[in-house]
Length: 193
Image (cartoon, helix red, strand yellow):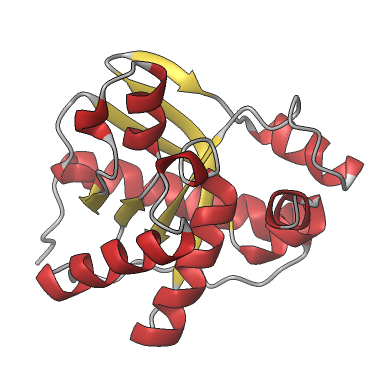
């Protein structure tokens, strides 16, 4: 019996398409699979919160606008501590029906061909997708909070199935995984600034 909502099924299908596209353009062999379970619980949320604080040294300024670096580091911590697949996912993000970050397949291919991260080329957003279809986004709300000068958003972490998100936020995956990050130069560029 399928436990996923229609909205979650749509996200899962887009995530699987992003895995397939990533495999195609990077020649990687990520398994195209979704599991019907939830990994995010209170202990997992506590772990994420602590790790994000460690990564950003407690500073919202080291969190905001650093989505690739933060999520790459966090995904590695999740893999190590929970032994589950955690994919850094790059793509579009819509907030309040407005696309605030956009990263199309053609943009992904162009960045991969250039092999160096020009911040003008990466206009997308990064978050983590677990094989359960759960999204973990540790930077979006803080980035919005700083832009709007609203500290109520600082440090807020999204960690749930895409189907459980309210209609104010929508994620569309384009590419996934460490191999894309390395081959495109995104991790090297943002990690060693």
